[in-house]
Length: 256
Image (cartoon, rainbow, N blue to C red; front, side, top):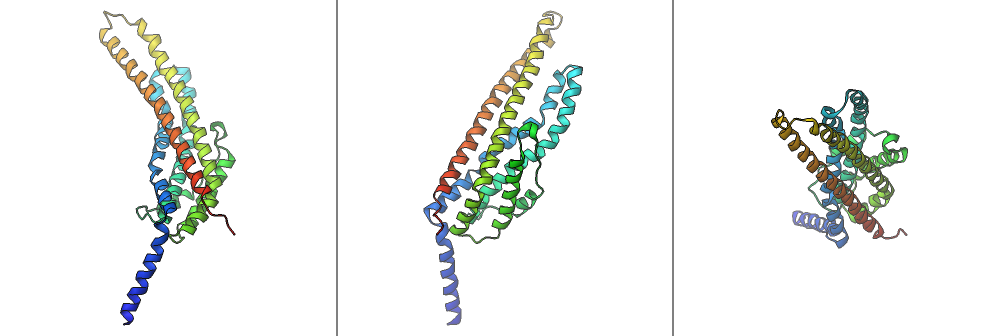
């Protein structure tokens, strides 16, 4: 009798704990978390920005090479922080999904890594307010991971995360503009060099070199066109995530 009663109580608790995750709102939160892979476009473009100098270097004049090499050293350091913005927002989204009943996410190691923090890079547009937002989100997530899987926990965390999430999205959009501008400058350097040098090749003496140069020119033109589309997609993904987050926050019941 005691065993059967214990099993009944455990079963009842399981049903009650699952009620929150079965509500329409929690389904929306899990759907929001499922969109987190769309942040990877930002991550990929950050890594492309990081490797700008490696692509430009063969096309740079000696004087420009020294300047770009100096910029590259600073860029490498900054990109470590730029990537953490992606990590923080992605872990936040997945934490919301986990609190809403989606058990697929293993977040503890990721949340620990957020604690290392970032610093401002004013020349890039990453300001102190973004740094503070990231730190606040990291602290919030370190507490959220221990919360029970229920709708109230989702609402509390999302309410507190509203402002830092907004700031981080703002930082990521600002950085995408930087990446886009840098890519345009790179295209001018690379394509400009090819356009300048190709006419000087002798069609008879330099046939092979001319064919290779023209092929490289076409490849680069296609590359920069596709990268431009990638920037557009990444910005749209951030806008979509912001809209979904705003909608979920707006649905939070008013506190008594």
